[in-house]
Image (tube, rainbow, N blue to C red):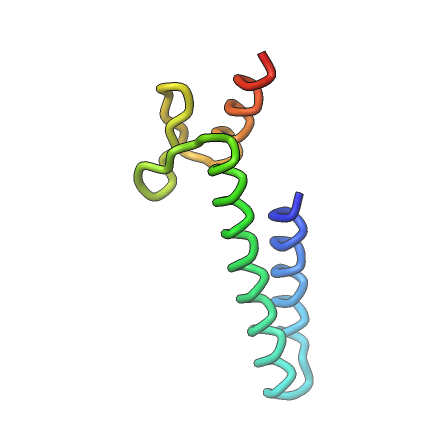
Length: 84
């Protein structure tokens, strides 16, 4: 949930930067967007760690012996596996 929020705020800040009236405002919005992007990455990593998902290479995840290429699929499978 935190990841989704951070990604939406990142998009919003990027959009605000595009319409900013001054270079200082544009820079501030880009800075906020990069901070939200970093928080989204941290939230994804925390969720993967909590569910026991092992990240092998960039965009490859191992869950219960199966490889997934998206974190969303890996998280869904890990949650499904722990629910059983």
